[in-house]
Image (tube, helix red, strand yellow):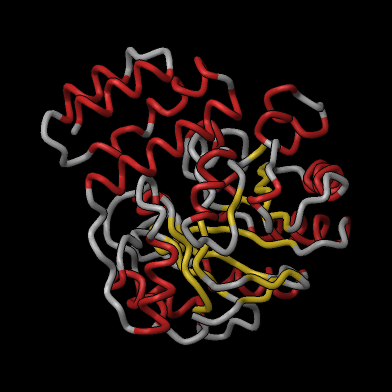
Length: 320
């Protein structure tokens, strides 16, 4: 793995944690960094809510020093509001600003943001141009390959992004209609990369060295971004760096290793949110930690009822 430069930000490697709404909070980002991710992203944040200085948005933007370098991902459909929000973020001493152009969630699409923008290249160009001109830190963007299967809108967005001064573009190689399932379209991804003058990062279905190398063999693909494949298995980042540097295959994530990560996650979450909420917020992703364990359904049922760290420690004893 080679180092990756995003404008004036130099990353140690080119294996990156994806932004995931409701998932990539500060505790999880810290785990990914300790597992070897060179860059982490916040959950996507509404540009309007940044300008309104909402309490919830402030909590999403709480950042620990061991998360850096970090990118804040914003979404919206108004170029002026996006640019003003970018200025606010810059003043928070953030390293990179990312523009969400690919979220398929209905509540985001209904506002004209996220993947809805892929069908309006003129507005995409305006948003990217306004945001890039408003700040002196690198601006990147994340998109989908297309809206429907076999459709490639990414090639056009690549040209727009680099002409607007965007420093890096991440392409999720699934269509909007596929959401988070189905096979990524490597052919369309390769077509989008062909004439790229800026770093293109691959995203979508990357869970091991086989899925990673299938993207990295494509000319002009400069790195990979891992989302759900990293939850509960944060060693995947260092593992892939080792694979690309030395040819060592990734080892399977053991029950013991996943429980170590879970205990660390609980600690960070309690530190960030307090004991009660710190345990509650992990309920939505605990399945990633306990998948394939004997009595997984029972473990999940117990976990959804625990309210103290002592309860959790008793659960760990039950698991082993």
